[in-house]
Length: 98
Image (cartoon, rainbow, N blue to C red; front, side, top):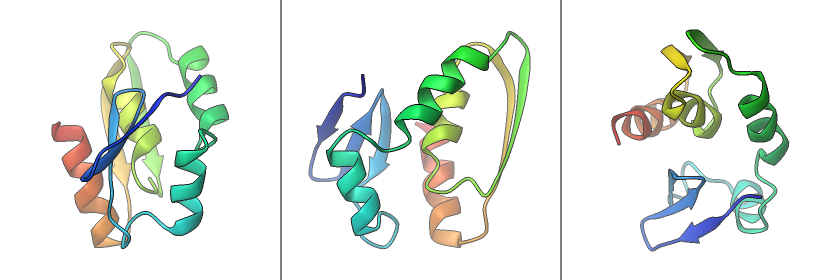
């Protein structure tokens, strides 16, 4: 089950902080984050399929939630994310750094 913490500066799902930034988080994404459905199935599947030593290449990393969830996994050795919009890329980089 996803737990959501909403603070003035970010949303937090499973320890991943997502920016509370309307230029990055659309209204639809915000609604799905708030109701707990945002990439819920993907995050549950990720936990089941990751194995020790995994190397992840995510193309079109979106807002960086799944990438960040994978990056925080102890099973993942290396992570690579390719994302086009600069706003999204800067958010993803901040998520990996935190």
